[in-house]
Length: 342
Ligand SMILES: [Zn+2]
Image 1 (cartoon, rainbow, N blue to C red):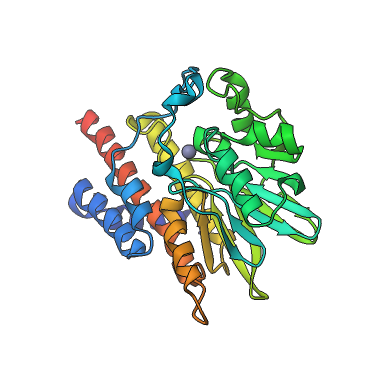
Image 2 (cartoon, rainbow, N blue to C red):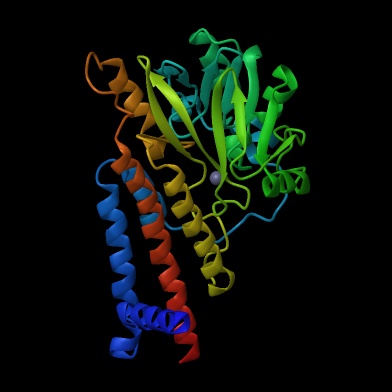
């Protein structure tokens, strides 16, 4: 009986995809439908994310090289300050934005110290994070935990500086700790010393507040996302934090591209489940959660709604955007497999 049901489900899936009904799949129509689902989910709220994963060309895969980034080899090559500088801001009673125009860093305060999430670049972490915290009355010496969502230069850049100066415990996904250790030149001056290896569902608790770490492999093999709570004028709101977005994995050949996209899609599905009940969506890129614009809106909020409190439906839609765009790209690789056979 069970086998019959499985067979039936399989045939139904084939029929739905067009394989059974027409003898061959209409890949273009399938990919268009996946992109359309992402566009519909994105609305005006998540245009930055939609553009990044559905419309802009993706890199061909992981960077296997080990070269010193130009902005480390020669600090004069760092992008001009006006391309990244943004004002730090108190966003919730206990959450502070200390990032820049494109990349974010967040400080979650508790009665026993600070949990810092992501550290942007080596050339701007000093001014944006350390300087930004001080401007808001926060003492960086109170950073007790540092969570690095993944080991890319735009999030790990200030990690070594913060670890050596303020001695927080540093949390990162196991495969990303490995990446850092394998590439001493790429992470020259930015690599923190190996500390806590994240596990799925790990709870980082400090001063009565908890950040739950979720492993969401895809963007990198060790990418972490989070759920935690913040206070808005005393009211508790649940936050989902997305730790990796673009298709930064081998994605231009069916093998291993199809599998890699599936890993990414599965992570977004799982994260959407963990985000059930969250009404705030945060990202480590301010271009994806509109942090800089929202901070501006927040300044003029008055008695109005909190601009980050977008409701659980919108939070769920964020993860649908990522899934729809990944599925569209995955379909194109499935098409390559079929065409190679014919
Ligand atoms: Zn990245």
